[in-house]
Image (cartoon, rainbow, N blue to C red; front, top):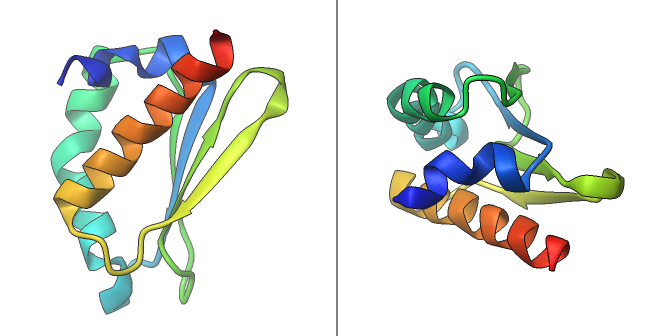
Length: 98
């Protein structure tokens, strides 16, 4: 899980959008609750934005260099799949720098 410490090296910003109460956002909420502290500890100056809005479908947005952004829908994904999605976004950041 060395990729967790590379967020700040390969991304400019991470945004997670979710609903505070809907069942479709439950795994996204659980992911944030279990992983935010660890991610922030490993990347203290990296902006990890959690945006809550009633009725929104859960999404994860990564902003890279030169304003490039990638968004992923999280509805129906497990916590492990959300973690894998974040890892894949870090890999995208690596490939954009190459």
